[in-house]
Image (cartoon, rainbow, N blue to C red; front, side, top):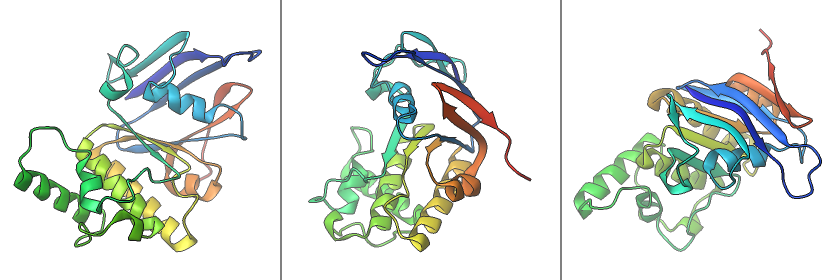
Length: 216
């Protein structure tokens, strides 16, 4: 379980601090919604380690994550923009998620397996700039697979996709979350994405999270 308790942060000049508390289970998507400027991106930055809180705790299966720098946290972040290197092939982009020390054959085997799992078999040698938006998000998810980090942070990951692609990519996120027991945190303004994916839902308002019971 990912547990966030009284995680407190205020930007310079901010009158009242954000105070975040919530839990997320392995194998589930937890959604966080709220108006623009309510602190959703701040929460993701705190979880990723890009910001440091003044108080509170972040624990994953009772391990304290706060002392860990961003590169050492068991966290991956997927944004609305896919964060790929456009001049590299899909395979080389995915390979950035691999640990150091693998020989070329081992690396390519793992990359090809990840491509199959995200439904992109055979496109590893295509340059990222030639891929569609949906394919790019799938490549980013494949890279996340190879990083093998149990917390996945999603910041409006489907917003730039057309409706059909959006549905297929979010279905893939749900499948990968369940299959790999990820703790997936979805920040989204889109009620249909939240309804389709999230088992737990929170609304961020006035600097605090409120749990929402999904409709039957």
